[in-house]
Image (cartoon, rainbow, N blue to C red; front, top):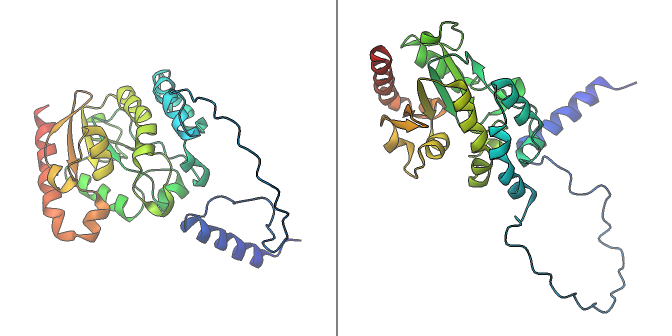
Length: 262
């Protein structure tokens, strides 16, 4: 019979290790560091075999050659979700509880793209549901938009640059961004929104092909795949710097003006 108290303690300890980024075992058996090892004379190394210049160095790099074709082969959002959920080429998936694909109305005129799931999002399998997500909902409700709306003109559709949570909520790496970006671009093509909102640095830099930071990019209209797009300060940043909410409000008013004229 399982001791429920000990089980809860063990589960909490496992969660704590995952929070610290320890999401995989180093070896299956313990290593005896005091065991005597006989040192044999070194064996001459075999002559190196010339490597093919097209061969990538790692499994994740090899997968990068496949994501564009995998994404293009998806002809519906359901097919795209299934392709991402079954994709094993990104190491982030090993430490994630859920694949976070989307939330809201796929027919919405406005598509919001964040960076990656946080802890709450990873648990629930939906984007922007923690404290930052609650602020996001209030921000867009102020201009008459909601992820719960059925009417496309007042609805929101939400996704992320990465579908899996990075350890300790770190920013996506350039390699992870390059690997998963084809899936995101296909997501945009299939959803066909009228406007795109990039939330924060990673999604703005990835989709606008820029190294300029969000504090300078925010409020500047551009295009993503030919679709009008505006970067906004991330709600998590606004929670840390509430004095910047006035800038976010100005950008939301800019979006509302565009929506009214479209």
